[in-house]
Image (cartoon, rainbow, N blue to C red; front, side, top):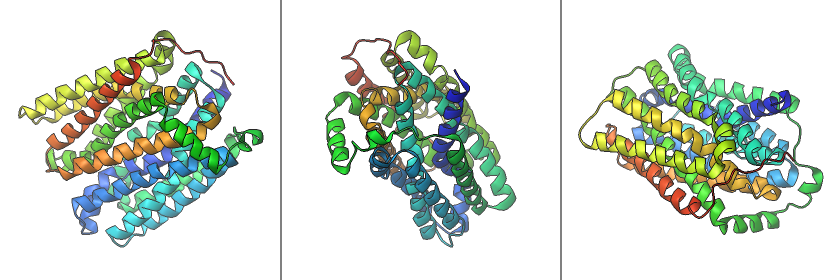
Length: 402
């Protein structure tokens, strides 16, 4: 693992983390924002939902653009948009303005989600791609560990608006890193082959590829289960269980530790057992833990320690699902990596947004609706894995560096 390999992983991870940082850092402030702007819980959750929708849907455009004009230009544009949205959110006089500027932020964050995956595919395939993706996930996962903790400190010291000034500063730092530490990975000759027509053709081809669609939705429903947790956890843990914003941040970070720790085993496990087998086992483990969690809470148990332990184990399995399904889905689509990454990201975030919205309809201040939403998503991911991966042999994938 060369210094160049590690440097690329760190830069791509930081670029990918910009969007999630803008989510995780303000989670402890959601109840406070509602009180300060005289907004309902549903309206405050809408500021989270529209960010997800904008970040997800914009990827469908950003991906093909990165195939046509290169990887770096869309990243620059996205980071500037993100910074504008951050300034607007920091100055928002009411919940409507906050929601509007969160849309702008989400549009900008989409580039950081879709382009780094395409860069990974530009540089590597197979096990090497899985190893780079797991390192990217390591840096990316700093967000759910540090962002809530940082957010709670910023909120307690300077108020919730300061959160958006901080994430705007992070966008400026990302622009500097992009300009100094990352080379263009999409050669001009390859860009000449890309166009709007080829992008539309690529989307049509990808949607007809059952393997790509199946793997994308396995990861999508895994992510959806986490989105349900994101949207509801601060209200449940702070209002229902009585945790302070700081303690909530620690609780939230513990689950991220499980996710990170297991994701770093991706390279070793896939080299030994093959990507498909790792996905299947991980999805089984995740669905099993979530079904147990639902059974316990449906029986009338309402204990924070039980919720913490089962989520910790479950999110460990999820840490294996996300990077492996992403690599597998894009493995055979190197020529349209940006388009494939865009469609994958859009489907991931659309699935997560729908799950978040549906779970929000049943929110009653208790953990049970959240647990039902998480478990339903995990079980659907399990079912899709049986259909998608059951037809294929478990073979370790070769990893020639391009």
